[in-house]
Length: 254
Image (spheres, rainbow, N blue to C red):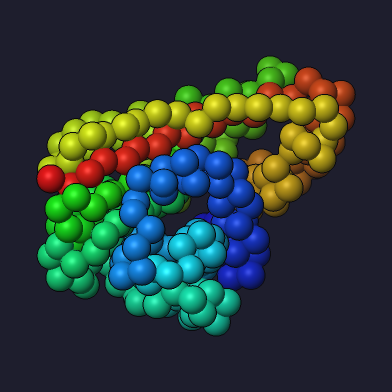
């Protein structure tokens, strides 16, 4: 069984993930009218990394944050006071039909038992003309690693995520999910990959912390130490490529 991360470490990881998608998020959110009465819901808000950004971007809107994890909700309520927090299930949202202006997901659908049901619920609670968006859903099964010696490392992490319950092919399914619900003007795409010289610019700061948590029960510690050293050297040499295709989709409720 994989050890759960302490809540503060999870928050740092979620904050890093939010930074990866900040430019795309700003582009997509332009579609949502900036009105004082706007109600924006983040489904699966975790500890509030995205909700905090939404509140900062839309100071006149009301941001609602929902998560099924009570500890995450308590943490979010303490640290993101600008959002209204509620503990609840994405598969049965506790909101009236057509009561919101937008419903957003971020690295959430891959963890749900029934992502189609959760998406249908998001459409249900969003008014006609409002927007539903999945801001980031990875496709770990299509992960690309270079140098090649690190490819098995990526495969093992993907296997570990699948054992934890993640749909490691969620990214490629996102367009079909959005096509199956009552939305129009749907846009779907994939975030690009960019790498810059130096480990500081290219290496995700929590990548190895996450890898060790995922693999500590299946890979000997000495092997992990050697792989981490090789990985960091590859970043320093400017040759490391780590790319997990991460998809997004947005559509307007009819």
